[in-house]
Length: 314
Image 1 (cartoon, helix red, strand yellow):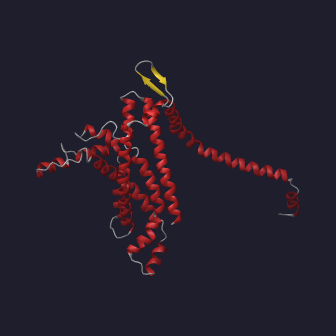
Image 2 (image 1 turned 90 degrees about the vertical axis):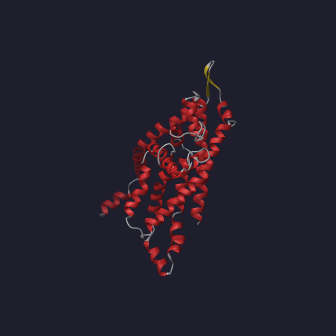
Image 3 (image 1 turned 45 degrees about the vertical axis):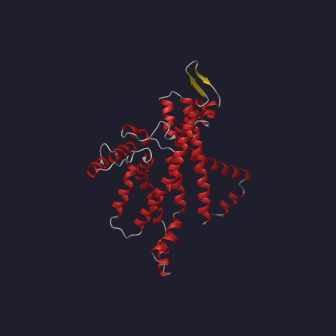
């Protein structure tokens, strides 16, 4: 830069400099808005508008005499006194408390095994374990229904061959069978998350641990498991949201197996479906859906806050 250029830059008014800075900042903000506009539009169409419409529907009731009438919060008042709703909520909570920890422990064990470099064909194993996640839920339910059903499939053949009377779909064991189906479908997804986190751990840490005389168990306990803490929190949140939305399995299984104990209110989602499409109670179903959404968000938020706090404190 010559003397003339330096002099010209020195005499530029401060107001013009500030104006140019604001213009640049405005331009960057507009570019950012352009990039997020497609997502914002899609999010509004498939999430915000349906939630608003459901909230609107929840304020009305359809009567046999008088048609649809505005009833305010009557649907919510009725819902909190509905024993069938709370029965489904309790069942889903019990399912979540048992199935989610078992599934994540299993996924973590698989990820650690793949990361140990002691297995042959790890690429094939990784794809094979993840493959059930790519199977549609309806297809998965049909497959397991044929497999575990006593009329046909594995257990039916075993009962004939051994003279036993084993039935995975009795009222007391149906929820366990659904847990097996869900675990089979989602273990691979969580395993892939954990395995990706373990791959990102610097190998220098393992070399340093080996120099200090650490064995395999100490490496797992001191290095690998602490590295998985934050990803476990995310996996728990996703799993809770998924289990609270159980619908396909209890919807399809009653048509395949007898005496399963699955009722129209077996899960809250199934209850909302039957209220809306077979009971013509769209307003009540909308109130149920909104309450379940709020409950899911609250539980996931508590898990996120407490889990991330412990992960960062560790």
